[in-house]
Image 1 (tube, rainbow over the protein chains, first blue to last red):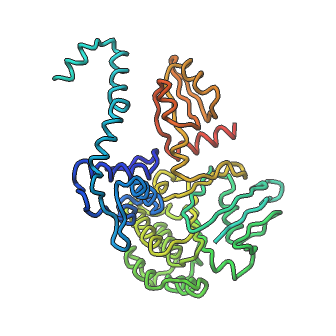
Image 2 (image 1 turned 120 degrees about the horizontal axis):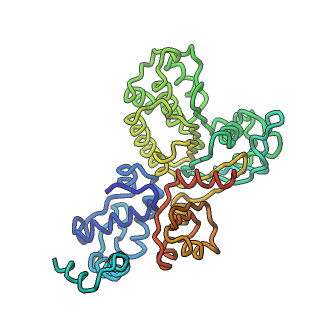
Image 3 (image 1 turned 90 degrees about the vertical axis):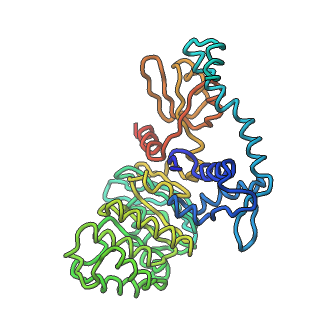
Length: 116
Length: 284
């Protein structure tokens, strides 16, 4: 992943970890890269990286083990999948429908394209 | 360390470089000090480093004035774009001078970095290329371990690879030991990821002081048909507007979500661009 300088950096760090969990690169109880590892890898401020990681801790997606590091929570993936599905309509379907409307496409045309 | 800037004013003859600015910086934190040429950045850094006296007002570090005060200035290292070192000195003499002045100087790190940047300890400053002098500046700033380290366009002569090495080392050292680092630059895109907080100066005044991610989050470009955009921005703080063929782009302070809910398209604004538009607006 390449960071987009114009968007909040901590949110991108957060989403990056979420994506690793969703695509199962990081499984339950596996170690999440540390704040310092993120800071170094992306050349970002460690405090910014920490903010993204800490939000995931607050949400219970990952948990801290003092002196050892951060780990993926047991049901993190299920939770994230549920959350992403809830967002799916707003993030993907709505813009799709808007564009289709602009181009004067019918519902049938849209459904046919989905099936393709 | 806390820096308190209180009604600080600096005049050079009749021209006012800083007019009555007040703000507080609190470390450890990496600050970006931004602004166009002539906005007062360098004047401020000289005052902070205790190199010059204010016309009125004060800049205090942990409650103490900085001018000509060794107790304070041994905690502050200012690296400028050029002329940091006496031309006749050898690199090793420069390092020795810094070691004598800065009580927390890290000589081991200095020697390692001298090697990394392929500098020769016995070379004289006047024989060095622009890039080499910049590299030495960057090294002295890092190794001073000064609780307040200030870089004023330090990497002008460094090539991309050397700059990357600098950012790597900076992050590494910052993680080991947090301190206050102030970057003044107009090459913002590259270092903006390092900023935790941003200050923008404009014609001697403080235009803005904000957390970098809050700034990214709190502003966006809204695009759509002119009338629709005009309606949406009626009660917003607008930074800049552009029109083309009935469509309008409006740069605003406001959340993307609200604009998207109103059926408008949105995009984020890089800090570099935001600074340009903000200073245009205020200057106009």
